[in-house]
Length: 257
Image (cartoon, rainbow, N blue to C red):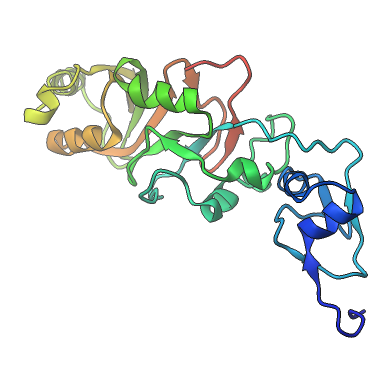
């Protein structure tokens, strides 16, 4: 099919506003909320162009109320770099936090509306070589909690020995614990002490407060420990649970950092 002569595709927000009818602002909220389908497919971009012959439908349960802010937990894979900037670029959010990467146990499942993937703030970000729990949030109170309260939030880190490393002797294990519990360098001496323990013969556990991932990785390099992986498992009372690398879920209603 083609447009009638002299008629161009129109902006989706304009079409919805005329069809409902409603204001243009309400139409945009319907669209960004994921309530509008074009030929059966959800379209969440108000600027999308639609032809006169295309079917535009509004969900019967649609609401023009602004969507609530979200907080998302992501298992960042090692080797993935977070871009500089206060907010995660929307294009990256759409790629990393899509329906295919959502934790299967997260309910409801599926993709989030585009509006809830816009202006997500990365909180307590991880360095490129670190993996584990990352937090993205639109919620000002949670942003304040993780930025201003970082020094009071305990983080749990797990560190796996390199696969080609022989299992340490009891003497080596005690030596590594002593070295971890005595940070080196002037910057590390100004930070709260680390608390290290062995979780198994090939895995160390660290509990710490006030350390960034960059601080920690720098300290591990100074100590020259033969590590294969460095992973953050928990921030405050919120853990990664069963998230596989690259998977994400929403912060639960009853979860508090």
